Each structure stands twice: as structure tokens, then as C-alpha cells.
Image (cartoon, rainbow, N blue to C red):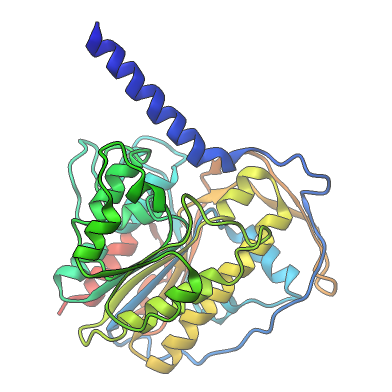
Length: 384
């Protein structure tokens, strides 16, 4: 009987923790939530692509969580007809279904993008039997490359976790945090501080990180000053704020910082960057939220492109884990930037997702393929 009670307490606690982490899925009740009124646009630069047939030394893998073609075109419309993503000439499409479901969740899709293997919804870095599957970041780490993860959610959330951890359920945030200590990842920046400090096991993983040589910072102005070494940037207890709530240019700054640190490694680097909250906007049926997060992600794509164009040894890949919201554009204006959106679901959809590639190796990413093919293509390109 005591075992049953303990089990029920565990399930309830896990459920409450998951709900706290997943409350971004509530559909918005704001007036005009589905309308984006054109605002100040940002300037977009054009970059000359390095030789696409050569092999890359570095990879910057950018994931716009929940970002399908409609989200991208809404962003283009709202920015008066242009975004950085239009620099890409090598474009393909990937399928996103998970091992057991036509509609994937971010955990299974993130695992597919990280490991090249399909799994069940909710799985983090494990196969259908919950056995560990090595991910592309770990493979790069073994090859001597520097590695990093930058996101606008908790670093223990589904997509970043898939590139670091191995756990049977995405809701196991404290176990996922502990998995960071089992790696030699050089840089990780996002939220989730409480999963390292306010733990049921009583451990303070920030102390453990510092013992491993990490600079642990909780403020973006301090994070931006770090130029070398190992960095753990944990800027909020759980998820960082949205752009509309005042997050600012955190993703751009964090990405620049990560690139500067990782580029010190003569063996090259692998960096995964996620524009995480595009997904939230789809769940909430909020077009304004969707556009501002897509623009924030696109400006960060611009940071990667600028570096790659100068460096000439860096492959930049942009895609999504899935589309969220069944988003469509019912009205728009390229001159004012106004966008009127509509949504068919509060969840993810099964539509194909675009893949954009720039730089050495980019010619390998055209055509139609599965999400599991992307890390395999990266691995083949990086083989010594």
C-alpha cells in the first residue's frame, strides 16, 4: 500500500511540474490576438555563400520551434517583404512524424533531429526501448569539437534536452539537468536555473558545474562578456520572458557569445540554437506573438549567416521540429506589415517542414527527406 501511495505522489508531483512547464499552451483570450499590426521593420543584409561543395569545419544548427512556411511568410510580410532567411538558396523539406504518432511532439522530433532515430513522443535521446542513442552534439564532442546549445526556454526543455540528455520522459527536468554534468558541452545558455538548484535530491548542480570549470552566469550583460572557457548561462528560474514581455535581444547576444567562445577551438564547433517560443505563439493562437518571435529568430539567423559568410568554413542549417497551430495567413499587407492569421488547432500539425542550408555542405540538404536524415547528413559532412 505504501508503495502505491508513493507512486501516486510521484505521478502527481511530476504532473504538476509538467503543467507548470507547459502552461504556455493556453489559447490566448486577448482581443485581436490573431492580428499583427505592422511595426518598425529591421534591415536585412545579403551574404555571399561560400563554396557549397566543400566540407564544413563548423555547424550552426538553428531550429525555429513550431515554425512552418506560413510562420516564415508572416514574418516576411510583417518585415515589409524581407527576412534574413531569404539568403538561403539550398532548400529542402523534411517529414516530422514520430515512431508511434503521425503528429510528433518536440521531444521525439528533437531526438530525431539530434540522433537520427525515430522514437516515441515524450522521449529524450532514447529509442523505443528507452535505451540511450548518441546524438550529433556528442559525436562532435568525441571528435574533439567544441559544442554548445542556446535557447529561449529552459535548457532542460524538450529540444535542448534532446541534444544533451537521455531520459525516458521529457518531464524529468531535474534528471535532464543532471545529464549536463555528464557531458563536456562548452556553452549552454537559456533558462532553467531552478532545475539545477531547487532539487528534490538536495544537490546544487551549479556548484558541480563550477567544480567542472564552468563560469555560471545568470545575467545577459555578464554572459555577453565571456570570451573563452566553459559557460553555463542560466538567465531565469524556468523559461525566459517572450519578446513582447521584454526579453530583448537575448537570443542574438547569446548566439554571438556562444560563437565567439566556440570558435576558439581549432577543431571546429557544433552549435544548436533554438527560437523556442514561436511554438508557444502557435499554441496560443497569437499572431502578434508569432511574428515577434519569428523576427527574433530570423535576426539570430542573420548572426549565423554573417559569421559563416566571413568564416567560409561554417555550415548553417535552419529548420523546425514541427509546425504548431495549423497557422495560415488570411490577410496581409507588404507595405504596412499587417498580418491577419488563423489557426486550425491548439497543438502541432503533421505538415512537412522546410530546411534551409548555407555554406560548405549545403548542397546536401535539398530535396525531400525525413527529419532523421539531417543529423546523418551533418555527421557524414564532419567525418575526418
